[in-house]
Image (tube, rainbow, N blue to C red):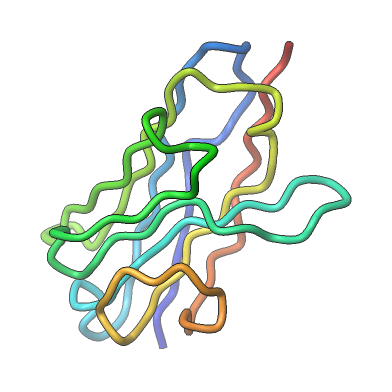
Length: 124
């Protein structure tokens, strides 16, 4: 069983930055692909970014590409999401997820474990 704990959310003004962290615990957690998803009020959860187990492959949804950066530190079994130039439409609960397959995946169905999420609010 893999457990995930997110942190780093908060309230920020438009144009500001936040860095989210997701610490994984459990067997072989550094060998898994990991990703970030978000869910805004009244909307379905959507893919944000993903990273392969070695960090060599990353994917981003179009709306965050160039503003967000996903990275990982396997020694700490932690992934990060650096979010710059934040916009009000980035407001959502951000959740990290683990894919046992080890690859960077963009579909929710490819993920096996999920964190509880952390709130990100961007004020205009």
